[in-house]
Image (tube, rainbow, N blue to C red):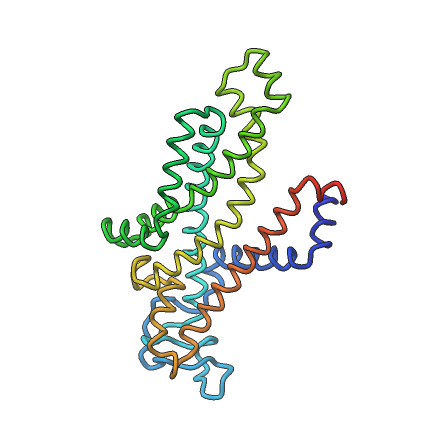
Length: 284
């Protein structure tokens, strides 16, 4: 714990990332307590109401109201819960699939490695947005389909990194000694190689959260994500683009929320990568 605290104090950017990620998670968990209003409640009397701190603000909505009079702050708070659920679920699913395939490819080699890596190459050759649009267009927009699509677009990063780590680890002395002692291949993978590749997988997972947040917002912006009236940051951006000249707050505040979350996750991921780097650990 002391080493962890020293690492945090030595990295101001890492501390900023941890704070931003912590605020994001807390906001998503405590959304029912933090939201001042019902995020789907329509109040046409305050339609396109400006934020309370502006000159023309009506005083009812801290960050203004949208074209239906719904409170922007409440929708951003509840939208953080959707974003957190989608990001974590998709990253966990893609990470589990990618780590499994990467372990098999790196440890078994041969035709298994060739098939998995060629499948990864095919996946990487397809533009992510096009792939997502094709799948959601065929299955229909829903929260479940959105998570599945995001999970399928991210497993290749885990697989390629875990494969590289496994190729290095399987030739190490401790693996060779365990193999000579009669351990099965499954035991070697699960007990000796998997724990050593999890550090790299955790760092990749952290950075993948930022990518998933952006991709989820882009799909929601295009109408392929969570459907109205549920609050989604990407959907709020899409709804606010037609009012950008007269009601700038409709698109500005959801965009700032996406910016801060992605920035925080990237800063936290960079700090986590440096923290787990053995070369940097020697200097701490």
